[in-house]
Amino acid sequence: THSLLYYAHILHSARKRGLKIMIYANGIGPLHGEENRKRTETALRLADSVSLRELVSFEFARSLGLQAPVRLTFDPAILAEKEDFPIPCANYFVVTPKKISCACTDALVDTIRSLRKKTGLIPVLVSLYDKQDAAYVKRLASQTNARICFPKTAGECITLFSSARLVISSRLHALIYATAASCPMMAYSDDEKLFAYLDHIGFGARSALDCRAFPNGNAAFLALKILGQSEYYKSTLSQKLPEWRALAQGE
Image (cartoon, rainbow, N blue to C red):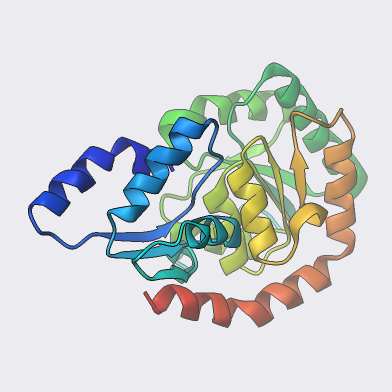
């Protein structure tokens, strides 16, 4: 949505020049305030073709009665293939965090420590966007004695996630890579895009925790519940993956 709002003037310029405009596999929201809603609607109405990557965004765009065709698709990151990447250890879970608040950081540290103690799994931290996350990942590692891995591409992330028992993420694309890897996952975030994505793939609230709303202990409880249903997650993801990849390829 930020890109739609930020580049609205560019879309206006493109329209004046007679260029075709496609909004591709976008996500919309959260929209805070009527002004942002109107600006987003204006940007969507400038497009000749619109595809949205999850159902909430799709239904919002359809509700506007746009002249352009509106399609439900899937984030193209789902099309990435595995690439060679060294697996850090035999039994591990992955955390892809972003800095949110001190309270959320404390809760995440407690979650990582608790999971390690209760399951014996080794925590592995991944910085998905180094400019924003690398320093935070190093700080978390120092507090939890976790390992850090440095995948540089989507394919390397998928390889790393394929052998993980669980992915806990505050980043949307880590959930998409976990989907491509058929790895059980949960969102620990303040970002509604992650919750909408989990709804889109059929897991919804059973895999999502709003880190602002829940006290310490809930994230570890949910993670343990997901680990106990690992085969269900893996089977469901494996079965649906061809359909989701076909949606993305259809663009």
